[in-house]
Image (cartoon, rainbow, N blue to C red):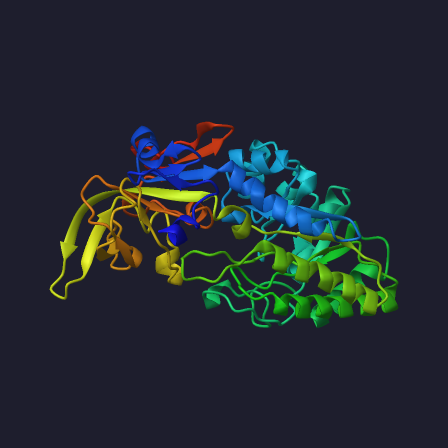
Amino acid sequence: MPNKLSLFPQNSTLTPTGELLLAGYPATELAQQFGTPLYVYHADTIHQKIAAYRKTLADYPGPSRLTYAGKAFLCPAIARLMANAGVGLDTASAGEIFIARHGEADPATMHFHGNNKSRLELQTALQTGVGRIVVDNATELDLLTELAQSADQPVKIWLRVTPDVGVKTHHRHTVTGTADSKFGFSPAEVQAVAHRLLSHNRSPVQLTGLHMHLGSHFHHSGPVAQAIYRLLDLVVVLHEEYGWTMEEFCPGGGWGVRYHPDDPPMPIKPFAIGLVRAVIQGCKQRRLPLPELILEPGRSLIAQAGVALYAVGGHKVTASGRIFVNLDGGLADNPRPAMYQARYTALLANRATAPEVETVSLAGPYCESGDILIDSVNLPLVKPGDIIAVPMAGAYHLSMSSNYNGALRPAVILLAQKKASLIQRRETFEDLIARDV
C-alpha cells in the first residue's frame, strides 16, 4: 500500500477507514461532485518538480531556463500555471500556441517544434511572436525563409539535430534520436544548412542554437551526455568554418517517471546533474563558451501531479478465472496501455486499506479488446459504484484522448491554494456534433 501511495501527488494520504485524500480532498467526494471519469491535478506537485529542475540548473555557470513540453497536457489553466512559475513552453502545433496564448503565456518564451509545419502554422508562429522556431528539415527552412522575407520579419531559429544516439524507452515509438528518426537533420545535413545560413548576412533567418531530443520516458541518462558531445563537436566545426558561436542549446527533455511500484526510482536530480555536467565539461574540453541552456521536460513535470478517477460498473469472471472489473473510462481518455503497453497501478479510493484479496483486470467500456487500462492489479473486493484511482495520470492521457465510440472527454480539476477548481468542463453530447454541418 505505501508503495502505491508514493506514486500519487505529494501529500496524498489515507484516512483510517481507507479513504484516499488528494491535498486533503476525499477522492470520492471529488468524483461525486464533478462526475467520472475525472482528472485531478495537484498544483503543488507540479511546482515541486519545477523546483527540482531549477535547483540543478542553478549550478550551471551560464544562463539557463526551463520550458514545459505542452504536448504532455496543455490547457489555458496549465499554461497560466507555467507562465506564473516563470516556465516557458515547448509547443508542437499552431493549436498549442493558440491554447498557450489563451493561458496568457508569453510567446517570446515559447519555442515551436514539428517535423512538417504547415504554412499556416509558421505564419501563426511569426505573427504571434514565438521566440524560437525549431527547424526540422530543409523544406521547412525554405518556407520559413520565404515567409520571413515577405513579412520583412527577422526570425531566430534552432536546428533540430538527430545525433544517432539511442535511448532505452518503454516502447520503440518513443525513441527519436536515432538515424532513422523522422525528426531533425543529421550532423552532415546541418553543415550544409549552416553554409546557407552563415555564409552571408542577408537571410532574415538567424541561427542562434541547436536542439536535440533523444526520446520520451527513458530511464538512463548516459546516452544524453554522448549526444551532447556529438552536438558540441558539430559546434566546433561550425565555429571553425564560419566563426559561429552557439548562443542557445536545448538538449531536450524526456526523462522518465515511475508508473508502477515495481519501477525503479527516477529522481530528477541525477539526470539533470549529469546533463548540466556534460554541457559544462564538453564546452570546456572544446574551448567553447557556455551557451544558454534550455531544458524542456514534460512528463517528469506533470505526470505525478495527475490522478484519474473512475467509477466501477459490473464485473466478469471468465472460464479461465480471469476477473474483469469494468470502469467508465479507459482507451478514450488514456490510450497509452493500448498504444505502448504502458503499465499502471490503482487504488480503491474508498476502501484502500482493505485487504487486497483479488487480482483483477481493469477494463474500459469501449468496443476494443485492447481497452484494458490495467492488465493485472491487486485490489480489495470491488463493488459497483466504488471509485478506482489511477496515479501518474498527468501526462499523455488527455492530450491523446479521443471521442471514440462517442465518448465524452472527462472534466479536469486543479487543486491549488486550498481550492478545487474546474479547469476543463466535461464534454456534452452537443459538443460531439458542434463541428458537423
